Image (tube, rainbow, N blue to C red; front, side, top):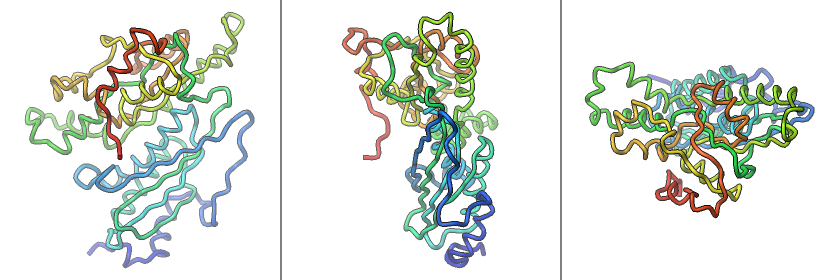
Length: 337
């Protein structure tokens, strides 16, 4: 019989989980290193609740752990930050199997190691529902902080990758019988499911932006403005592409004009969603791409260096007749309340 949390006890469970943590874990709190010169610390937190954010039908324990780390790492990337460390608290029914718990921590650790971070603390408690609460810490140069309220009229609207793929993966996990044409396409099915189960924080996009920024500094004599004035705005698209665009515009008090012909829709989405393809792309959610507003000079360089990215529109005056915010908000994405 597999052992459960109650059989092992709190101290026994902590002894097992210690192997997935930084060697410094063991004190009452994690000691954070001094902030780098000219950097800011950024902090984000996220909760994952059983049957709301994951379930045994769609997500293995390892994938639950990966997602718990990845959703927080994505928030750091959306701010332009690089990860420093994470703490994770986990609430568990007393009959939770130790194998499931260890699987979660293995997946969490795998994601952190992939993106250069580590688990530096946390807590374990008894709970009627399996719940994970993660807080992530990151660092970002002061002049490269990405925020939602800084979009400027004339900016290009850029996405770092395709949308709707996580929705497609979830549909295949929940309703495989509705897509019998994929019965013989195991690799294709697994690839789509992976978009949902193992999202990818877009730190590659931040690295490219850093390189562009450094190049612009060297070429600053040729710029109409000093590089420090080339402010980027953005967020991740975890709650849907339409939601991200609308939130940026509301926070920045601007409008948007989208080039609908430029909005990428993958063949997979067209095949599975049919007439609902645009809905999946705009409102599917949990793609964890970045939605960025930036000067065209930067946007052009960016999309050349990141093949998955695309310019899909432009930031305009909110009072313009071409403002399409109302069209984006015709339907809402997932909300908890």
